[in-house]
Image (tube, rainbow, N blue to C red):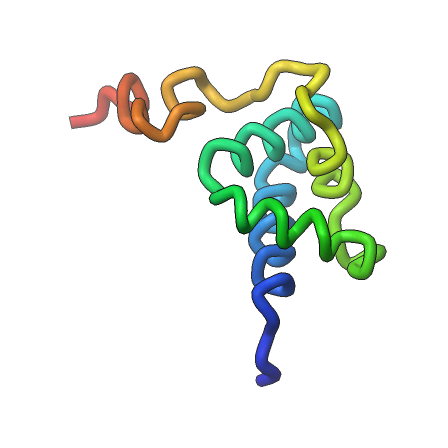
Length: 97
C-alpha cells in the first residue's frame, strides 16, 4: 500500500461526499457537497484541496470540482437544516428511541 499525501486523503474524502450526494439532482448535489465541506472542514483542509484540484484532473469527481468553485450554491442543499450547523447536530435528526 502506498503512502497517500494529505491532498490525496482530502480528495478521497471529498469524492466520498460526492458519492453520497450522487443520487440527488446535480445542483442539489453540488450544494450539498459545498455545504458539507463548509460546515465540517477546516479552512486549511479546504485551501489544500482547492490548491491541489487542478493537478488531480479526472481523479476529482466533477461534482467536487463544481462545489469547490462556487462561493454560494444556486440550489438548496438536500441536507436538513438541523444538520447543516455542526452545533445543531442531532437536533431533530431522529425520533428513534
